[in-house]
Length: 153
Image: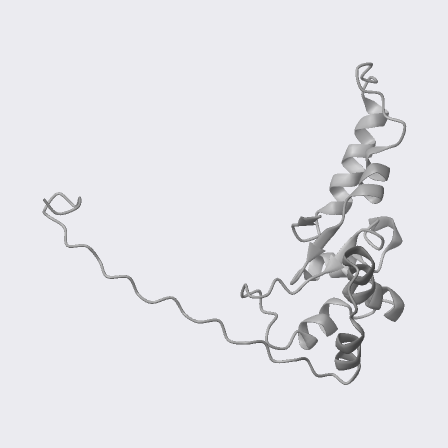
């Protein structure tokens, strides 16, 4: 699993596969499949706020449909919480609803063995649960310094 956004992945996979065709075969490490097939079998990528990647989901040539999961990256501020609905609507605009469901819910259910029934119902009702507010870190006092700018003597 790689938390790395997804807009760059079609190029990366295409470039790796291209290299297999244009370079001499490495006799010390023969591949039975193209690198892109290994990625498809073994790697999953997550994304939150990636509109470019979302646009590429609509295209089968991107190879993204089977290897990505949407995540909210809570509690990190990725413009997602407390309500990801507007962002999801924008990212998945024009995307097949079944593919949307698989990326947002289905794949996580299968991969992590979790039940997302309640979250799917909330998404259908267009409401999301309010997540707890994260406490803010207290301001740390500054150390007095001498003229050198280093810790006090």
